[in-house]
Image (tube, rainbow, N blue to C red; front, side, top):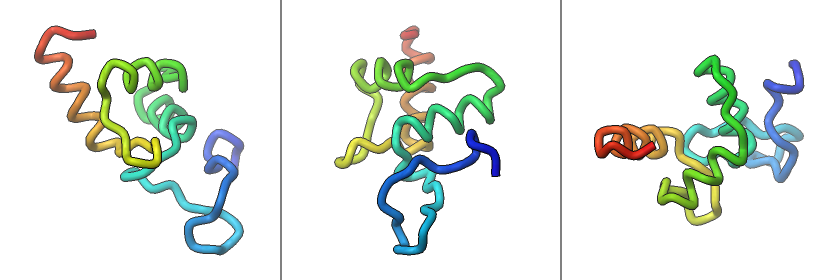
Length: 82
């Protein structure tokens, strides 16, 4: 596994050495890496934090649900926001 594919270090959700990425609850850094890999354009943690500051939804623990984030982006684009 290459470093950009590895989940961020932290508590393992299942108690087994390595946690799996959960698209419904991704740490911001992991979400940035996944979006960069999938979208083909760089997405930084700072970019995601700016969106969060602008109203993008997060879970109670600060993680990002990629489906909710994508829906927020579509809503912002349709409203003429950046």
